Image (spheres, rainbow over the protein chains, first blue to last red):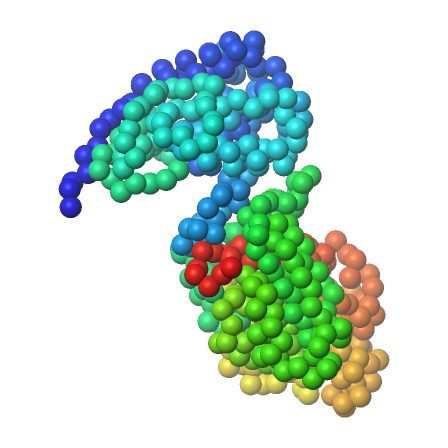
Length: 186
Length: 310
């Protein structure tokens, strides 16, 4: 077995810069944070959406409503995976009607997660628009989906994985590219 | 934890981590029930058959709603209107239903062990919704879930279950779910209906309701079936109600923040006084709510990609 090699794509400082730029882009395109809502996709998108929310508060002085969504029950491969994945929580404690929703995820890959997330959001209400912000776009789309805001484009092969480590302290956040790993679907 | 079960026949062999997994899944399911659109596509294209050989409204409806909330197609089959009345055997009925390719069959039958028997002959998943006096696993899990929501834990709680222990499949599932999670269980009823052998499960058996209720955190009342009086398990309903019914005076012996449970349907004024059934400490309707979430969790977990499911 070949040993998997790991390459650092972004460290904590780098991530902070990228996410700050994403926040500015989001605010620029929407002309401020009026009527905006941030929805992080479980699990990787949640800390990122919290970061963006904090940043918006620092820039605009507005607390944007924020929630998170677990897409497991909306997956298109539920009957194909060998066992049922553990469910995570969905929490959207406000109305999505007429909101400009920014979906936040860590890695954009096949696009199937985003398809599922959009289906989930529609069950909560009728947003004015849904935009997509991702930290890493690694290519290999299987659906006609693209991101409105991309932190970093990372060309990958299918048997590589991108690990966004955002579960601990912000100073320890980082993004790694694992080469020759067994292919992991998003 | 990886869910490996194909059937849910009883809680007697359920491990603690499996019960926790079901409850954790149910918590996520409960959130769906708070939405405007109370439906997710997880079980799209799967068929769930309710195969009920005994009267039931609550459990059957609960499973039906659970299946529909997950987008499964739910078919109800009740013995009163079926070919069972024409003399078809249980196995033939089940084989016929299996030929229509359901993913999950939920069965209630008056004979203990029927779901276990069928599970050996059919390829779909089976959920036991009550078999004779044996088990009612989804009730055992929803009682566990309701108490966890009310008390935050199970370990160390004094839980008194009062009524017809002898004929109760709910008790036989509860002793596994609540007992295995570390509850201090007390079973209480008239000597004819509270067998001492139940102490083998680790629960304490008493014929004195005051002893059972004293300092309890949870008091669960069981329905007393009116038919039992005819078979001389107790002299009269009035006497039963006076000695084993829960009223304010008896309930005041329990802890101040104790809660009341009842698997339903209630005989108001018999095992439970009118005012207690509707009081703030009653969690009876919460049990019904938890029931849908628990059953959604079970359906979701059993619908996994094992080969036999259609």
